[in-house]
Length: 448
Image (cartoon, rainbow, N blue to C red):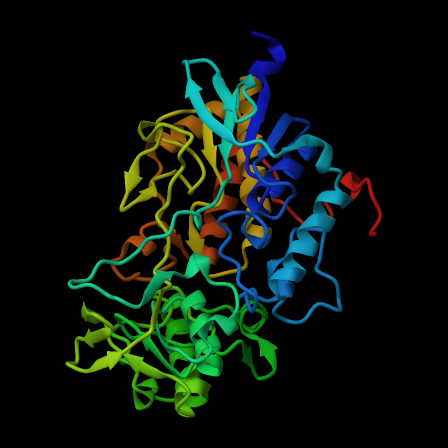
């Protein structure tokens, strides 16, 4: 056992969260290694990464002005909503600019992480074994497809959307998309354009938010407009959507049974366009399969060639024993969605969902994690304060929103409420807020 092992961090994953953590470690002078099983950075945004869910037409659902890392804006020539190839190029440029590549061991999977009470013993796919004083899990959530189960047997083609790549897969087929998330709606639009007949099955009604409001990206419009209490914002946006979109039930969709923002927002009005033009038909939930016949809860039946299930993912951290985390509805129950309540040397980033751009938030969360790691390594008062907060603090991060009762929303946070509580924590710990300009001196490479 060496002193270096005691004060060195193991980061698992070189996707969006892992890169943010790596830069935060450099900023705080904390020794670290990143292990990435793929051959380059990018995580799920690299379609060549085995298990990636990225398809040819995938785009960000948050805009470039709200989604970039601190001190590293996306290029001006990027569109408002960058495509997956733009995001991948951006992430690799970020890793190059801040000299992160030398800290990443590619082609190396963390097979097992074991805690002995003092150190983490990390077993790698290369057969090498290393020890670390802290472990940060940043391997993400969209790697283990969750397939729905229905009575009966479907004799056509049925698979999860993780395997979907190109709209050409739908050509000449009668296609059913199951799932109303943003990916499901995007893929449904591909089916509407290419399939012989296309259908989308939704369990509940959703609020559809246009990607642009008065010519401005929707999240930029929300961020730069007047800041209102959530109850008022919900009322204002509800009126705005009635004016811009109208009653979606006229298109065959179920009317939402919840207020706006109480589920993850669907930023896709292209689907509404296709529904209005008869390119795709909305259906309620599936009741059963019978050969190639699919029966729905409204009693209708359709003959289908292909069923594509955009039904989400099971969250797993397979290299860490489940007992190291407290789980709630299949989600790790972490303090601030970052800190294990069971192990002071275990952290995670990226195991949450929110209603805003992720990368700047990742930076703020990574800074909080790495400062905590450093305080614990150094044995400062801030470490004791953080331990006390993790044991007793039960923040309400919903921002006044009553999220629907679903597994997906078990760890969902409202971004403004989350940031407000982070500021409160920083004041208690005596740590500065993360502001633009703090990373400027860390750049080691000019743009390529």
